[in-house]
Image 1 (tube, rainbow, N blue to C red):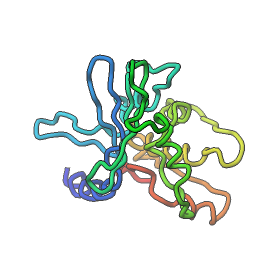
Image 2 (cartoon, one colour; image 1 turned 30 degrees about the vertical axis):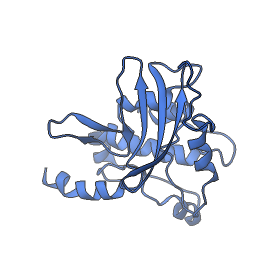
Image 3 (cartoon, one colour; image 1 turned 135 degrees about the vertical axis):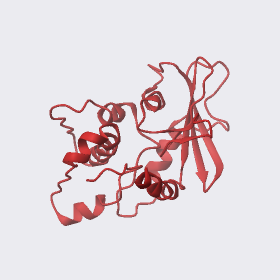
Length: 204
């Protein structure tokens, strides 16, 4: 308990940039806010759902062809603690063009991320994970999972997000064995040495 509470301020400070980035609106009227970490109120009711939690899966898995229980997916853009912009993916809502100002529905968040300035270090994609990537990240922990494809399609960043997901979902098991990341050269390792998003406190 002492260790957990000691590390909590560091988690909150690390998540200050883009703490909450999404909200799936469900057909039953429920709204869930998805972010980099989980937060609860004084009664331990969830205010913010960690992106790795099963309850956040609907936010990433919904597509126009298969929205599931999601009727609208809202992407939030924040600066410090203020919401400065948002875009919507609307699934079957009559009269809703999908965006509050006529821009590309939902794709705006992904396009903004792709067009962002590069720093030479690998960033996170928790705000723009696509349904195909989410299936890889949340795949069962058994056997060997091979992710293959051409260069520059996001294989490495998906693998790092899978590591972050597994370190929380299977914390007890991986805290004993750890997670080993192997790269081809020092340049590659420097590129990916940014801490995986929302990493749990288990060792790696």
